[in-house]
Amino acid sequence: MSIIEKRSKVLAVADLIRLRSQHGTLLVLAPTLWSLFIVSEGRPELHHLLVFIVGAFLMRSAGCAINDIADRRFDGFVERTKTRPLADGRLTVTEATVIFLVFALVSFALVLTLNRLTIGLSFVALALAAGYPFVKRVSHFPQTVLGMAFGWGAVMAWAAVSGSISIIPIFIFVANIFWSIAYDTIYALMDIEDDRRIGVKSTAIFFGAHVYKVLVIIYALMLLCLVLAGYSAGLGGFYYLGVGLSFIVFIVAAFMVKKRPVRSVAYRGFCMNAWGGVILLGFIVVDLSLSVKGL
Image 1 (cartoon, one colour):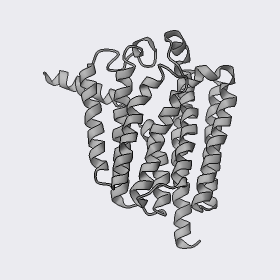
Image 2 (cartoon, one colour):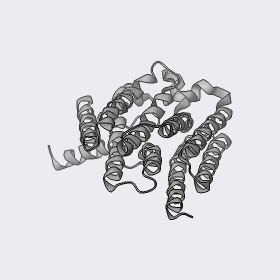
Image 3 (spheres, helix red, strand yellow):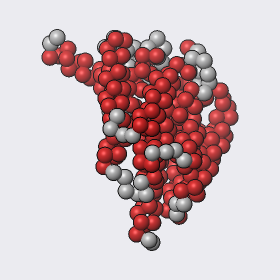
């Protein structure tokens, strides 16, 4: 293989795992770090931070690979995805499968440095990540499984620190399911016409003309779960301020897309959700820091 061919393969792999767009990694990481900082009372161990930050990148990358394997016969008919490396032939299914396995195994190797409960929970994470892309063939709500896959890190992070599972990470996990349904519905709006034409199911199609009203309701349910998580954890005012500000970001994103429902705006609304999750993380850190200082 020539240098040019090798470079082409490297670029194809980078496109497969969406290396140039890490908003998906932030969406995986946000609920995980919310949970990790809360259970660690604002002072997580460096080991736990590294495992879950690197693990989020690895598993999100593995998820992109298995998603493209599952969608390879559809992506070529969708304007946004027709240049993905499996759709345009730059990578083979075998190559993409190897990449999926490598990222998943390296991620599992990181988990092996944690306790037994967290190792056991990691198998659920792998099953959810691998199963999500195929749900859209049979259900209008694949985002539910996506939310479970992205939110499971919150349960794992809690177990890694405490050696047990409490109601707090469960509230975060359920909040993430609602959040995922919302932001991935916005994401699905980018492809709604192509999806209708080729028969791919999504919540954007299912909700139809009521999609924006439903988004507000779903975000409100997420808000409720986060409030319950904060109350159960005994968090303070800065936490609830962060929850409120994040909620405003999410609602603004939804109405921004409603006002101008084109692909570029829908993508921007999706990205705003990732940054909303980061905003909440920042307020969690501040709230816990002030609590430790007794302020």
